[in-house]
Length: 278
Image 1 (cartoon, rainbow, N blue to C red):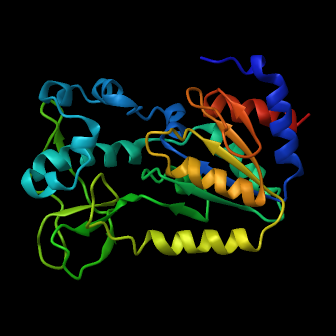
Image 2 (cartoon, rainbow, N blue to C red; image 1 turned 135 degrees about the vertical axis):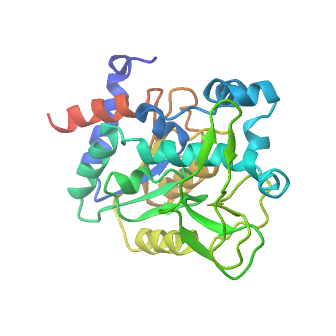
């Protein structure tokens, strides 16, 4: 683990950027949840450490996170997503979320969040203005594409056999036609995802950015394997302000001006906050 003390200069620069900003854009990938105890799916080995039954089956994260399984083997598909749904419900956001929210509350322009995470942790931590570019596990859609649209998963409970990682019937179903439901998540190779819930969030973010000056962009835990968050952060910072990239393994800033911090999210936010508070 990188020690924040080894990056005092960059931490000071980050604190100065955040302290002088009028608004904050938080761009977050999967690494943001690691300090809350959520599993790291980086590479097959990381996925298999989190879910050993899939190692025995020889299934990778890309293969399991595939909409095809909901039609071909819905017990397998809901075993994975049902487990994640309950995990995210039980997880308490780490104190770094509170730090970001406090910073946002001090800014006249407030803050917005752009995230590829589907776990709902930012909403649980009290953030408004969250744009979930890949959807949310806390909402469902019909597998058959009927007219039911998107609905909350609040009342859904999925029982999973921890040995086989297969869901036990009854599986979540569509209230409109009774077919198997699936999470409203953009999966790999997914042509059937409904984006009608996420698009207004993204439109609201764009409207906010157009009317906001003095923006600081804080990117946390966003890797290069799925570069959606990194690209958004780079584009936003190039147009509107400075970029702080926090990532213990892929911290490099290649485009435009930016601050690179090879530190975990919670450690970096805590160290910056200490400098902001004198």
